[in-house]
Image (cartoon, rainbow, N blue to C red; front, side, top):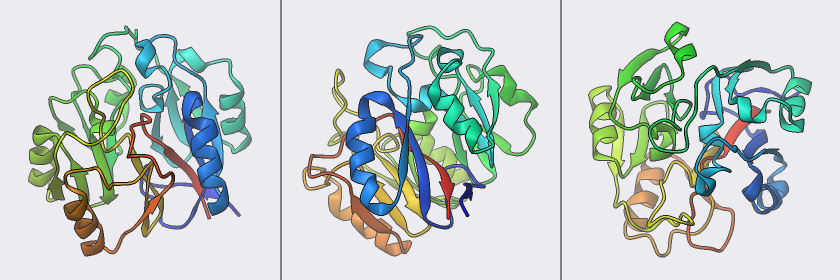
Length: 249
């Protein structure tokens, strides 16, 4: 019987439902289907920059278990109906979103075990009333996509500030080059937007790492933590604005 991923981004079992922005849903959905993962397509967010419209980490924040905060941009959508069928508790963001950073990043919060990392000056105000997590202030508004969680105590990032903040919270952090991840319309993308945990012991990448300058370090770090890489396509790794693991078995 499927159940919601209890700790956001960190499934313990095998993910059976995941969500991604609609521009990427066909490709990512087809790649996840052989693993028994149903993909929900989150509608594009008309409030943000056109280049980031399909980045789900600007539109949906998984708070805990069945609770989600979502942008008003997707309020009347089949996507939310699909979440409700799973018995999701959906809270609509009350933030005014603008298309320029950091005013588009109110929901791009990194939930990592029992901690939330974000620039809380720009976080959705609803987060200030959530006391489930220790809140760690960082300068990065795009905290979710800047970091790829490996476990509740390990992560990969190219953001030096995020790395320092996470290390101060006793995370084992691999710092990598900011190059090597594609994002249409930008010089480069983020590792957290290009990889996600698809099982307790598996990390799915949108593409292959052969062109990434830190390929060996990444694969070694995963091996050190007992995580197996899964490459969903044969393209160079690319940023889709996160894939959210929703439910697992």
